[in-house]
Image (tube, rainbow, N blue to C red):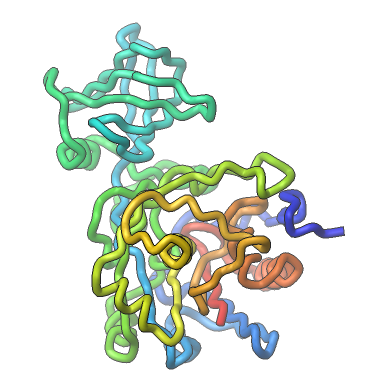
Length: 340
């Protein structure tokens, strides 16, 4: 018996060949599954035809975060190799990171371009807190991003099972990426072309907000009771124009789960800036997002649980099984789904 509050209920079997390791070219040639809740029907199309399916009364919201080359390789003073993945800045020039390689509080790490890090804290969840310096002087976030973009690698999700390539610098960044801070792309937006974006701007009220996607987006749900999952938090910011559109819109189309969580967090807290730790699931359904454009997500993840907050568990699994049967491509570089 499926239970929407049990993690095991969100499992499904995905053939490995359906995990996309590279994007569709051109971007809007990716396939699009449209699910209409009013008629309980599925339409198979492509992103090029997206305009035919967006309801006329929709205001559209996009995430303008920009992905940092957040994965860097270096060594400890002992000579041992380490891999560091920046997650996000904390307060007072401290940063939350993941480190592959054994470290202790006080361990000093060195990287290219005279970048150094010192381990300040070891967290129970496996994350680490570090400070960064260059040539012996502490550096601010913008200088750190500049250095990482010089020496680092795009942190492609582990399920792609490959190293980043030069082409990923274009493919794994949205056309409207603006504010550096993400370690994963808001992937529903990777399907847009300049032409498609122009058409959308001409017909719809289009707004941008920022949520810096963190490494926590890939964190598996370990507890069997989904409500016991410690939800990760990510920095967000909603500008004045976007806020006005959220408040006045007849209907809201969120492009991606990150936008959905941001809009829903604002609706519940009235905050336009801060840390969003909202966990949407069948026990915590959306209250302001009417339509959702998204990709297909990992089994037993908070993201497929978010889809179930719109569709319910059984319908979510039914739609996903239809996508598998039709050989849609899954995950970050994969095809997408529009819920209307």
